[in-house]
Length: 243
Image 1 (cartoon, rainbow, N blue to C red):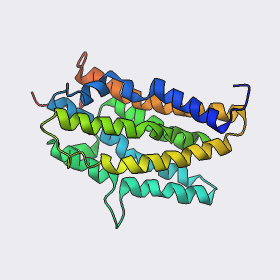
Image 2 (tube, rainbow, N blue to C red; image 1 turned 180 degrees about the horizontal axis):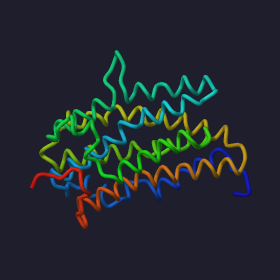
Image 3 (cartoon, rainbow, N blue to C red; image 1 turned 45 degrees about the vertical axis):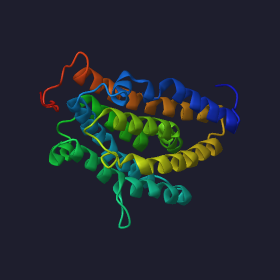
Image 4 (cartoon, helix red, strand yellow; image 1 turned 90 degrees about the vertical axis):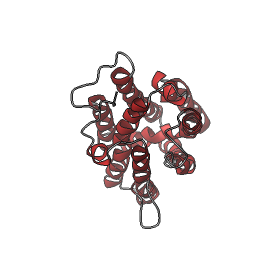
C-alpha cells in the first residue's frame, strides 16, 4: 500500500477480504448448513470446533496481558466473560459443551481435546501465538472476522434446525448471544484499527492480520473435510464417528 486509506476505505477493504476469504465459502460449511452431513460428521465438527472455542479466552487474555492501554484492557475484558462466563451468566464455552452433550459426545473426551484433529490443534495454536507475538494492532485486527459472524451464525442455526432432527434450539444455544456480542466486539475492534492504523504500512498489517485469521478458520474446515468427507482419512488418535 502506498496511500493512506480513509476509515471508510479501510473498512471496505476489510469487508472485501471477508467476502473473498471467510469460511462461509468453504465446502464443509455448505455441507453442514445444507443438511448433507451425517450425525457423526456433525459430531466431528462440534468436537473440533470446541478446541477453537476453548482457546478464545486464552488468546484474549494474552492480548490483555501485554496491553499498556487501560481503556483497551477494560473493553477487552468483556470477551473473557462472554466465553468463560461469570457469576451472572453462562459463558460461550459452557454453552458449546451443552451442544456436544446433545450430540451424544462424551464431555470428558471433548474437554480433553485429545481426539481433535492435528490440523485443528495446529491452526488454533497458530492463532494464539499470532495474538501473543505480533503487534497489538495486528492482534486486535485478527479478531475482525467477527464482522462477518452474524450472517454465518444465522445461516448455521436456520440450516441445522431445518435439516437435522438430532439438534434443537436448546442444543444450539451457544449462537443466540453471539448475534449481539460479535457486532459489539467487531465495532470496537474496527474503530480501534481505523484510529491506530495511521500509516499505509500499519493499514497493510491490519489487512494481513484479517487474512491470516480467515486462513486459520479455513484451515480448520480443510482438516475436517479431509478427515471426515473426502478422502475420509482420519489421523491416528482422532475422533472416529460410530458406524
